[in-house]
Amino acid sequence: MINVDPDTAEKDARVMKAVVGLMRIMRACMYATVVQSGRIQVGDAVQLIRDDP
Image 1 (cartoon, rainbow, N blue to C red):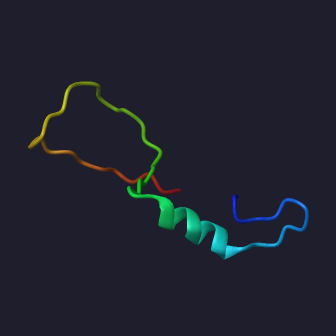
Image 2: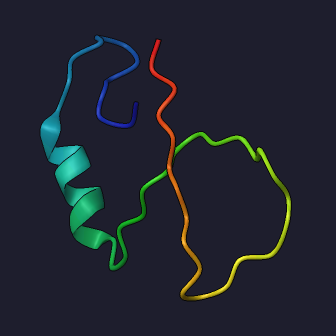
């Protein structure tokens, strides 16, 4: 966590806001598992399956 002081454990939201402000491209991440290998192309149908506990 870049917005937590390692000495005091105090959070400072200004740090995260500054980092986000400096980023030109936001990226999102997710965990995934390949259930069938192969090639996909633009226009192919893709199905996302949630595996919530």
